[in-house]
Length: 167
Image (cartoon, rainbow, N blue to C red; front, side):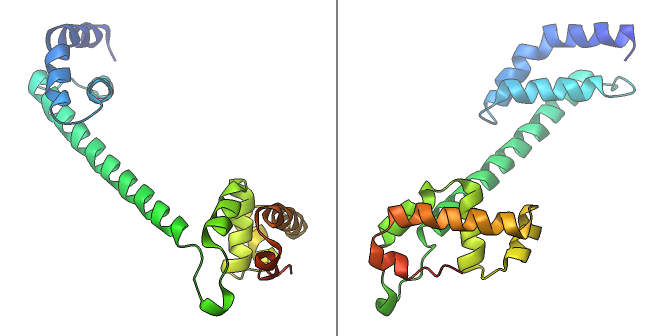
């Protein structure tokens, strides 16, 4: 960006920065970030818009709405993950295990260990498939699976652990 444009942007920040933050505050929860992103977009322009103030307000509005949509998607995803974690286990009377105990033991694993256990037991994946999924060797996947099962064993009672097959 040329020096003249840099000075023009500095003047725009001085004149309209507060109003843009106030405007963004009415639209989203992160007004400072939105205004900063709008000015960064302005800096990235090859030419100064004809009506920079109007352009900035429009860009702030668009970025704020994008931020809101992202927050909604994130909250929806987090809620879905929360629900799916609660339903990791199917309850069948003949194979009833203590659900809360099993979920707690599974959640106590590190994310990588949990990923391997879930892929092996519930996804019925081979160690070769898990290796491709996690970018590790099949032998490493197997070792981590066995180690994770040992950790699970400490979190579950003996009869519950018998239901989990050690391949």
